Length: 151
Image 1 (tube, rainbow, N blue to C red):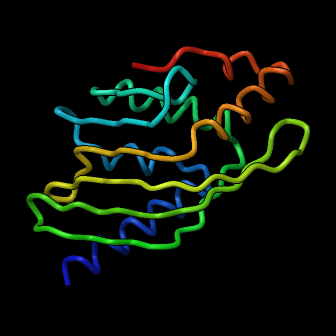
Image 2 (image 1 turned 90 degrees about the vertical axis):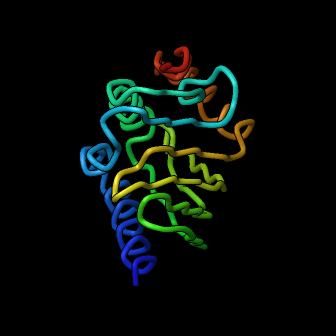
Image 3 (image 1 turned 180 degrees about the vertical axis):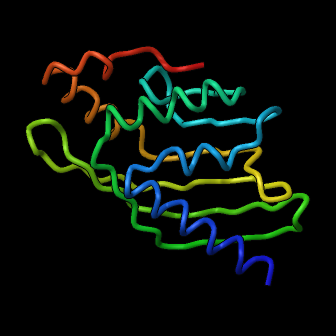
């Protein structure tokens, strides 16, 4: 029963992401002792954030860089108890650059939840492909596509 509730909450969270409702997402993070990591080196979304403020800043950047980002969830795996739950979601995302060129990436979210709050989120995806998207945005005049990661 508990895992069914977690699954429904995760699917609702990705539906919120697809609507661009990042406030819904950020409210799910614990206020302190939190971790948000995105794979890759030295691109605008990469790196580790360990404060709620930096996580909020990261999602604001995500909304500016990928305003039409959409996820399709392919697999979900959940294990653990309410005080320490691990969820893994395999996904494909879809987005376009400012000229309308389509991009798609595949990846995995690994989320650790304690008592209904996200305490750790890790995102693994093809960062070389993602770098091509950011390079295209930079060429299209989006300065933030070349920004340093939010730490």
